[in-house]
Image (cartoon, rainbow, N blue to C red):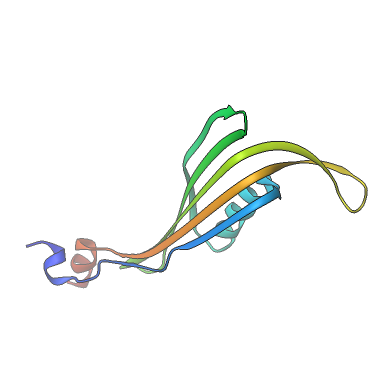
Length: 129
């Protein structure tokens, strides 16, 4: 007998969130902000993939895949997947309001965030008895 035979909805997904942006952004700051957010919320944060495609005449393409896990109780945990892809990305120098110059990126960015609650499956049943 499998846990799925009597445990329904072992994975309960939430709605997927998409963010698209075209313009100037700080990729390093975005990366650090996402990592800090999950660490502050007591998630274990993993970088699953970091891929750079060869720059084309339009710019470079980057892909980052992150996974954050947090064990809520013995029986379930939260899993959040964040996928970030950039297109036509080029380095630009931006003058901030205080007059300092900072290197940032210009291009298109696409962020996808999916999360789900995952039950413990067989471990959940063993701990009940």
